Each structure stands twice: as structure tokens, then as C-alpha cells.
Image (spheres, protein in one colour):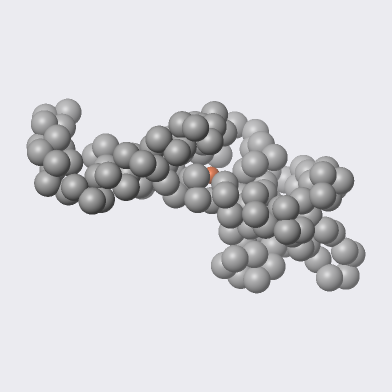
Length: 139
Ligand code: FE2
């Protein structure tokens, strides 16, 4: 990741590590976000202070209900935006990922709801979208 990860990036990453592996280690968080362990430790303390994480020395990192819900929400937003860019015809998964990472923090609930509605409409009316997609082939 080229830019400094935000608080939201941390919450999303920790949530997804816990979902996939059952736990989130500092080294894995650092690895995914491309930062050093000291930055991760500092952010963990902040998120603990915000009531999103619980850090216990011997038990490791857990999420509060609030943290878990936020992580789930952020991950859903990321996913919706990825699907949206796939529909736009962007094929390279790295390009999609980097673009979503770049813009997701600026997509508020209202914008996300509208993008979700469009994605749902496309899914319900594939022929409508295919007709449009044919126009995109020249791009
Ligand atoms: Fe993300």
C-alpha cells in the first residue's frame, strides 16, 4: 500500500484476519498493511482506547462488538466497490484492489447505498448491463 494506512484500514485488516485465521498477530497486520510492528502496536493502543479492540497481553487481540460490526461494515463496503469496478470492466484484480483501497474511505453511507443499489440492479438485469458493457469494449 503506497499511502499510510488509516484507522479504517487497520480495523478492516484485523477483522479479516480474525475471520480467516481466528486471530490477528501484529506481524500479520504489519505485513498486510506494509508498515512496521511499532506502527501496528501504536494503532492497536489507539483502537483499544476507542473501544474497538481489546488487547490482552497473553490472550492476544480481540474485537469488541462495536469493532467487529465496524470491521464487517468496512469489509462489505470494500467488497461492494470491488464488484462495482468489476462490472465497469476493469479486469486486473490488483488494479481493482488498489483503486478500492484508495477511494473507499471517501465513500460515505449515502454513496455506498446508491452504488449497492446499482450493483443489485445490474445483477437483476444482466441483459441491460450487457448491452451497456458492449459499448465499453472499445475502451
Ligand atoms: Fe479495504
